[in-house]
Image (cartoon, rainbow, N blue to C red; front, side, top):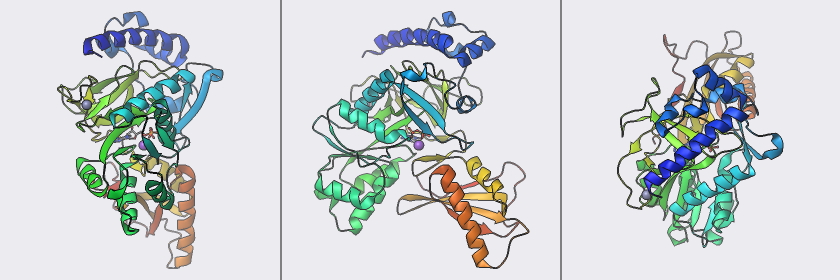
Length: 423
Ligand code: ADP
Ligand code: K
Ligand code: ZN
């Protein structure tokens, strides 16, 4: 679509949207009123800057369904991602939202090389996490064949890779490398397989990592981006040019703002990606702060698509860690620790990548009263903490107890994270 034609479509949709949230979401009516802005004030796309922003905290404060714009009878699906309180952020989809999601995932898959002849090994997790079902519906939408193998079970993944002949694999970038290494160990020649393309996302990765993946696997590695608050995967995706991610701005209107001032950055400069869902029904969001840092890439893409392009996500404005695709905030771990009697709130999170899989180690001081040389006692405490964290986050971690006052104290903001992963 011509950029100027799309601009009129966006404006039309934006106007509809502001009326829709004003009438259907009390939270937004209140926010608009407080800011002194009314739906009729939105006359141009630039007027979007008059609108209030929405944050993850707003979602959490209205947990679980407070920001839904429709009654539950219209919601056909719930997904969720983790949040700092240990409670997840909940999103709901109407039938038309599922159709929209399928559409943008179909676009993503096609731009990554898929056709109706493709066989797609979908190794994203199926469940509350949006990765699995997002790819699944997009693949069905284009008439491709989906193998819904979900995440994990590496031996079976390799068997399917070898025997079912998929030409596309979808998973986190780190898992693709892990699979490649395991295949190598088993003496499986990946270059003899039918694989051609990989669609990777849900965690940050770099050009260096892309080179590594493309060296280990006979594929083009394509970057896909999304977040459950906006829709899930399929907000933006690279094309085969591999020069930035096309963001589907007929549905997800992007702004890149200075996170401190909320003002737009200069063209091509890095800032926080803020997205307005132009067409979503279940939980429409106005100017949602993703906390993901990126920049617009200038110029046209050789593929001919006219969607704007964003650069790969370069970081976050908050301290969220992504461990094997799962979002983890240090505060979630802290909350577990304060409830364990023998643990102190002094801790450091160390993230490593071993065999291409993320390993999170929680190093925590025991409190004065309990430190003993008796290894057995310590092991029990470690196990207890490990178990509790697993319960809250749904991922396994390593726990290492250390003596009181051995973790460095800081005078300012505590340094809680040592991330040794080289992206
Ligand atoms: P989903 O359930 O769609 O993974 P989450 O809310 O769990 O959504 O996680 C979304 C976050 O994951 C994003 O805000 C971003 O930080 C990260 N993410 C997703 N895709 C990518 C990507 N391709 N590159 C870097 N980070 C990504
Ligand atoms: K994620
Ligand atoms: Zn392109």
